[in-house]
Image 1 (tube, helix red, strand yellow):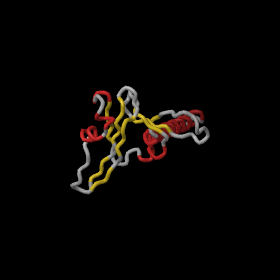
Image 2: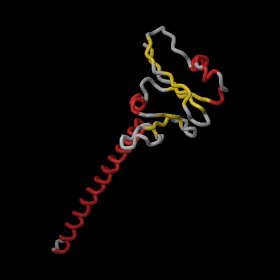
Image 3: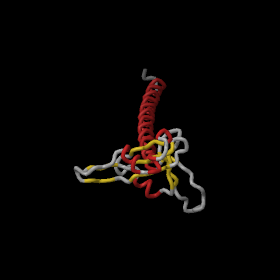
Image 4: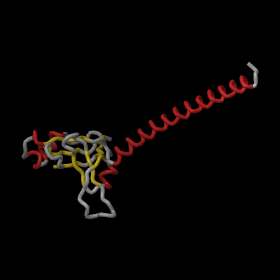
Length: 149
């Protein structure tokens, strides 16, 4: 089996999506179209200057949940990254606001959470060392006061 992800063709200047091809699973030996072949197949791509558009090639299933839940997507012209608009159930008529995919946001939050957990562990360890040193200093001071040293 051969798996290929979606291809998102977009205008370089605006980020507006021109064509999105579906992800595919094909038996071995079945031809899957290359980017150049897709450009020749789709008139909206074939009939325009190739300098005016670009393509993002996704892994099979990449952003599947984001595509299923969004009410629009585009490519950020500055970063060349996909951005999604998600419906607000409280304001269904609200115009779309494009943001980084929820998939990417969750991945970033997991990394940040891991970093925070490490930082908390380091602070806790330093605090425990500080507590032990304070207890030792108090014990030594008590011994001095009692006239033991």
